[in-house]
Image (cartoon, rainbow, N blue to C red; front, side):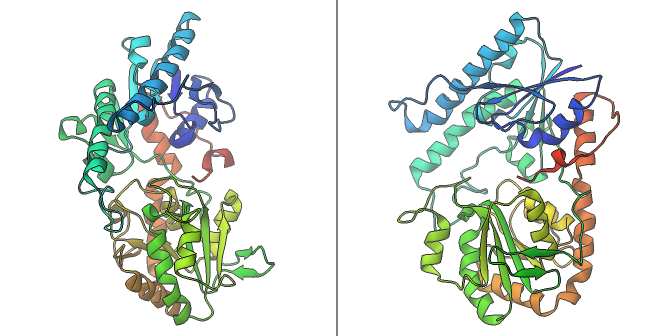
Length: 413
């Protein structure tokens, strides 16, 4: 069987299933990604680059769609070249968010196309306009609404969709939901487990250990979409309330979602200027190698996860699998995973004082929250790589074969 993966940042969410299939003798795997895609060992990757950028003359509401057409056009050229050499996939698995799979069926009529339906935009009830600090103006709402032109075409084109959470599934138009299956790709629960002897050496040489009063916060980039501003505003009260606690912050200074701040190079600098903190106790670790990231989770006494109503981060599930006590925002789709008082704690995304008080309570009474840690790890078991691969194989119509998990299949994003 020939399986073609298309993802501008391949492997992205297809890391686990592509890695599994690459190790099988009964499946031929090929991938297409942009020139900067990291790739995956054992999978041949064809790289492309759109031949030009979006025209400055294009209407602002339509720029995302023009960019998608340019991506789709370049991928179509690759597909036609493959076709001229006799290649035809049995199934194409694509992340359609950048337009790459728009013309798959023009190249290969009748091919089965599976889309990763990550997000369908809404001007109300999701990320847009959620934070009153960053109000959604009329032009912004019109632009958000227009972005769905691409996603409607994607829904029309695909034979099957996959959404990682029920909430993300619910955002799609009702007419298409029956075509979309809820299936999370999985996280490395087999590598994430509590370690009471875990320790972490800080850049200044100090060593922190499991059992110390340590607060952890993780995001790909430190930005409002992941509640970084609410977190930073809670920290002064936390540091005053517990003079011995340490805070570990993992994440880069770029922007994954939203926009850069005005008057500062990044959100970390902006919020530190507004809320000066003792950086002998608050440690900005940047982006870490996976093993160092695991140690951060293993020494954590309480892990804070905040997010707009948006896509669910792998880091939340990884923290739960590692036995962390998670304080999460009472937002979708966090509520889908965390049950307040049972396997974690939920707080108001905007209430920095409440966030601080909840963190301080966990630091003061860690033993009383031990049962929640155990149930968090049990909950995370439903999001294992094994389950994710099994679900994808069912969608692809391929038997399970022999499943072997390797370090390459469990890199965090």
